[in-house]
Image 1 (cartoon, rainbow, N blue to C red):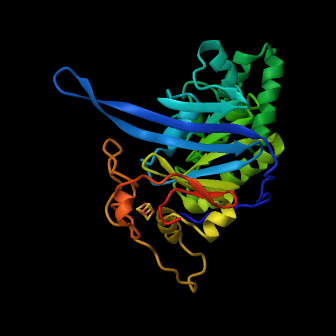
Image 2: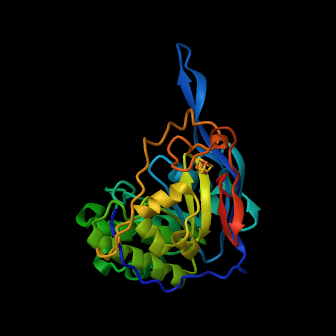
Length: 336
Ligand code: SF4
């Protein structure tokens, strides 16, 4: 886990702002096929009934171990994956079942920054063409106008003008991620879903890319869903944070409240594992037993109970619901 330093210009977001995104009871299940006839014999419950909202201009972090469903949640919200159940409201519009032209229209306003910038950039196209393609698809701009816009975007993400004529393989990992960010910004979206945007980069470059995202968020008035497994990265980026475990949202709260007083035993364990920058301040690390169980057959009741150091009898019998226990801080745990 890396320690990243980032300028925190905006810590608290106004609770009066409107919601840009509202997720209601969202489920994304994948069928598991088996037997001679390849029948559906079960489901991977990758996202299992999550609800949360993101206010306009807010950076919401989503954390959890790999396989907890956070990336699937991000892709479902963008409608790259089909939701099994639930509702996705974007800018007061229900986009859960949009298709064809209507879906393409809404995608202008929701863009993604991927973990592996190289895999998401066409190696056969010049960087200029990669960035201008979405603008070309959605507008009737002339060649000169397109080029000017791409040059502006390159400057905004800190790349030189001659990057326009180069190919993705000619750049370092950090520079490629800047290209991916420029492409995501090309249509001036309202929401960006950043899925582990710095986890493939050297620690020395991570801070630069995170600072860039923060600066762009202010300049373009963006709203972010920031997905990562690294809690120190999420802490520096986010106004509010949701913690996922085995497809469920187990805790959600303001960054300061969640880090100062994590309520869910799983969040407590994750936070205890963040390295302390001051080695004189020793803190006790909570080691969880066992591995994350399979989402095909999750444990009964609270799905964290086989690993939870605080588990009680009722934990294996009934599933706790997410409820507010402090202002704007919700947790799903029978201890509260
Ligand atoms: Fe642990 Fe029980 Fe709370 Fe689940 S509900 S986190 S098992 S104490």
